[in-house]
Structure formats: structure tokens, C-alpha cells
Length: 73
Image (cartoon, rainbow, N blue to C red; front, side, top):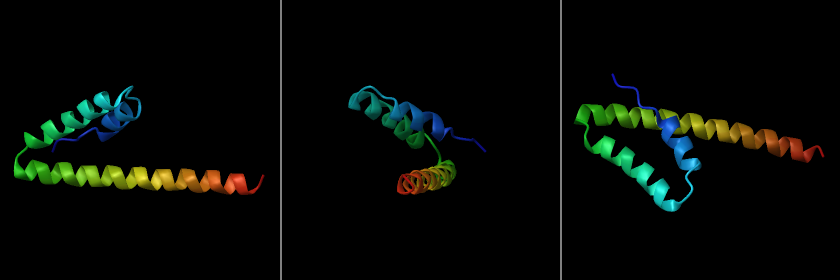
């Protein structure tokens, strides 16, 4: 099973200097996806959903931490 490094693409996108650079990064992911078999696409989607869920959880935790800290000041 191939492991996809979505974090690498995520950080590259966050640090992209322009919208064109961000679009090129997104296109890389689309090209990878287009090259996969149906079974590989299922695995890609599963790993992507797991990554997104973890990132959303992390962001929520960070937000709650900051929000709580701001309320104490």
C-alpha cells in the first residue's frame, strides 16, 4: 500500500507565494489521483480523509486553546 504524504502538499500550499503556485500544487495532487487505479483511488481518498480529519481536529484544539487563553486575559 502506498502512503501519500498529504502533509507535504499541505505545507507547500500554505507557504505558496502566489495563487498560481498553490494551483500548481493542487494540480500535482490531481495528476497523481488521475494516474491511480480505482482501488488505489479508494486508498488515496481514505488516506486524504484521515489526514483532513486529523488536521481539522488539530485546528479545533488549537482554536479552543487560543480562545480559552484569550478569555482569561
